[in-house]
Structure formats: C-alpha cells, structure tokens
Image 1 (cartoon, rainbow, N blue to C red):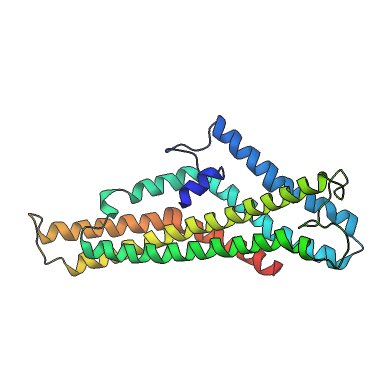
Image 2 (cartoon, rainbow, N blue to C red):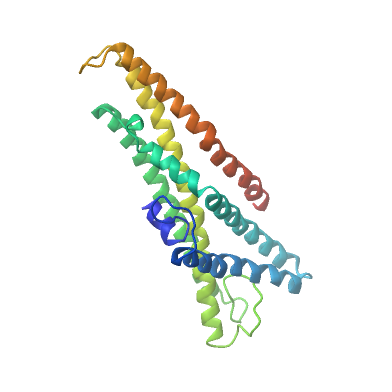
Length: 258
C-alpha cells in the first residue's frame, strides 16, 4: 500500500528504474509543480501583501515551514531512488528472509505494529485536511468568503466560480502534501522495522546453532550468521544512517515552526 501510494504520487517509478524521460516523469513533474511548488509559491507571494499583519504573517510562515519539509523529502527520495530500490532488492534476498515459523512471527509482529502507526498517521492527516476544508465554510466571524490558506492569486478569488476552483485547488494541494509527508515517513519507518527484524532473525539463528535440521553443520551455520551480520551492518552504513539524517534534518525545522 505504501509503495503503491508513492507510485501514484509520482515518487516511485516502476521496476528497478529511477526517473527516466517519459510519461511517468511527466506525471511526477506535473503533480509536484502544480500541487506542491505552485501551492507554496502562492502562499509565499502573499507575504508581501500582509507585511503589516503580524498574526497573518506568523500563521503563513508556520504553514509554509511545514510544507517546505515536503520539498526536502521529495528531493531526497528522488536523489536516492536507485539506492532505495537496491536496498529493497537486497532485503528480498534469501539471506535476509526468515527461516522458521518463529522468525516469521517476529517479523509479522513488527510489521503489524508498523501498519497500525501508518494507519494512525493517515487518519490524523485526513482529520487535519477535513478541518482545513470545513473551517472556512463554518466560520462566520469574518462575514466574507475565505480560503483554507492565505495566498495570493492573480485574479479575484471572491467571485464564482474562481472562488470554488481555488478552494478545491488548495484542499487538493494540502491533501497531496500531507499524503507525501505520511508515506515518505512510513517508508523510512518500514525500512527501520525490517532492519531491526534482521537482528531478531540473527539472534534466533545464534540461539539455534546447535539445532541441526539438515546437512548444514554448526560451522557453516555460524559462517552464515557472520555473513548475515556483516551484510546487515553494511546496509546500515550505506543507507539506513542517511534516512535517519534526513529525519533529524527536518525535525529542527518542524520544531521551530511549532
């Protein structure tokens, strides 16, 4: 589900390929330019017209900082697409697969926990988007037509049908941005879960070195455990730490905006 959503959002080309000139690259470019960069531009441009309103500027900058995080996440994912796909391909190799029912149960429990977190994030983001969509319609304190986000447009947004079109555009853009946020974070979390599960599998293999179920001897099983450990550490140094750096790089901005 997570990979499928990223593909729809234009962040996950099919197969083992990265971004190549073609329909999918055009699809990704249109989505990112229209619903991400365009939405950010119109909000940023509006700052010039509200310089004398401290409350409006504060609210706009808060929202912009949260949305700018998506630009960094999208850039990082696109830049490291080959590495991401190579990592997932590596995790599918026989060395990283569970060998017994107990090991499968260990992984399934971790994956179940990840799914709960993913679904909770989706529910919270849907609730946030619903609030953005309904609040201007329910708020009657201003007595005028309001948009969900303060933004400047080169036309009069208070007249129909431009008001309705702009309203829908802002809600779709907000939904696109929050969906990217959640699914990139969920991808990082999923990789972290699979990484942690490798140590669970390795520990189980070491505990059962003495259990000989086939022609493989203890020495061969120990060598396999050492290779598994080395491959897991190599995976950490080559990719996992970069994902953690990405998360901690955007956290200060998020904390500042809060």
